[in-house]
Figure 1: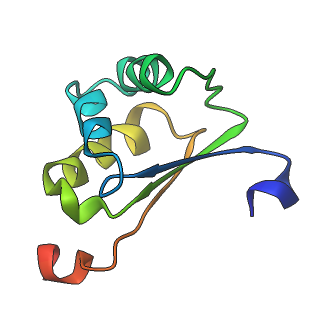
Figure 2: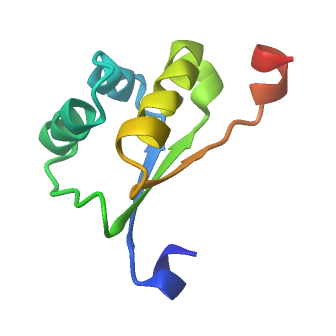
Length: 90
């Protein structure tokens, strides 16, 4: 999907790198992206990126943060996935 749309795919696997969850300490999507840029040492443009949060069940408190992206940064595509996600929200 990212390659076909010409967007940068930013993959965050919260089981492989649990420290990434600390980037989501704010409810402000702009601050979260700045935190991710600092941790990952990359530049993130909300209009030309896709943020994929994998294994989000490793940090279930992040599910509520997705709302802020939807409301305050709708231009950023955000995907949340997890092999055990159904047990967290079910």
